Image 1 (cartoon, rainbow, N blue to C red):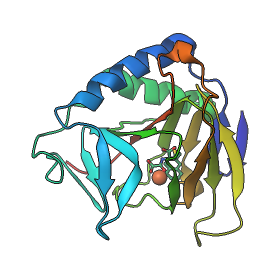
Image 2 (cartoon, rainbow, N blue to C red):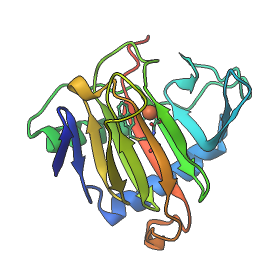
Image 3 (cartoon, rainbow, N blue to C red):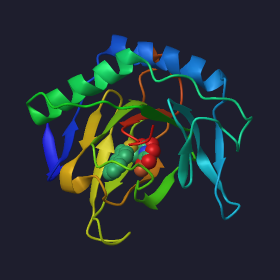
Image 4 (tube, rainbow, N blue to C red):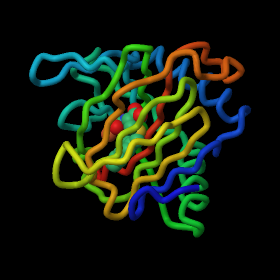
Length: 207
Ligand code: MD3
Ligand code: FE
């Protein structure tokens, strides 16, 4: 366990192999629909290299809605209670104490060997509750920056399969990104034979 910055806690190897296998199975189902996993189209017309599917609320830049107007007009799948329980357990382990936490959305990102994510802030939520991040599959280079600029200072961290990262307090609105994934570094026993999955649990503050 390492606190990268105030409120930003990295817990390597937090998920068991069984938990990772279960999450991979669930992600495969969620990726099929009702709103399929797809490359998000940005307002600029650009297309994200990462593929995303959402639970509870559908995210697109810069809004959360129940219905995926930009994909197929369907309502996204519900956010399961067991995933909220996992989020509370993650926070308790990262912070060493029970904290109230009611995540209502998950963004599930899939990275193939070429995908990356530029430096950005997550500001579409109307809540400063922590974000819980779970990584499965290939290791990536994760860049954790500062709240002021896209650039330095930042800290580079390798996120491997099973790692938990919690971003709360002053870290919640820091710039961050994924410059690179390392193909072939994941354990196929997770059920993911290539690429990287990242699940982030969040509180939208919407109703
Ligand atoms: C720090 N995802 O979905 S997870 C994203 O690996 C996102 O897919 C990356 O950035 C991924 O928005 C990074 C780590 C993460 C997620 C959310 C954060 C770090 C964060 C929100 C605030 C601060
Ligand atoms: Fe983000």
